[in-house]
Image (cartoon, rainbow over all chains, first blue to last red; front, side):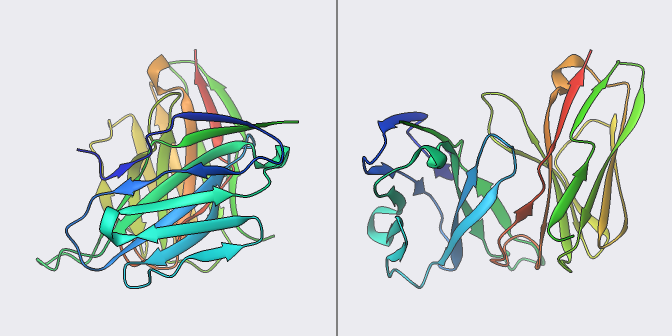
Length: 120
Length: 115
């Protein structure tokens, strides 16, 4: 089973529409982090947001908002009034803390990404 | 210059060539990573270095050889590659080792084509 599932492979919208990108994760840890990254055509993954597992407060940053719900293990990302420049691949990621069994390293898992195309 | 810089941006090489990818981070981070991104496939973690020490090798073939001379520089040496190795190779860095909650900062990647 995948640790991070982004069920939407591709989404197309017209400019000014709102769009929500889904992310469902799986972990048994109580301490973990969730991330969203944006990968425009230039190739570089750009960090957008990080949430820790103890903070379920939703966040808004301009046209971007994130809805973190532990009850459904989801961390969805909404773009309001989408623009052509929002066209990119968006990745959700889960970071698990070290297992504690002699390990000092955790694990980072990426979803397969959602290709968002915004048409003018 | 800031962020994570990768060179070259594009590389075409034959199967018998030897080449190297370079990554440099100017963020003072302690961990560096190599990822492979192939078309229609998820991001694949290849190698992780924490404080210059390799801490992870995700069953990567020996034709890929990483080198981390210091916390700011990371190389990926390539030799006798196969056409299926053609992909976007991304370098990243983070303040703390993976699992510590630090976000990764990525370079623009090297688009590798093996002919």
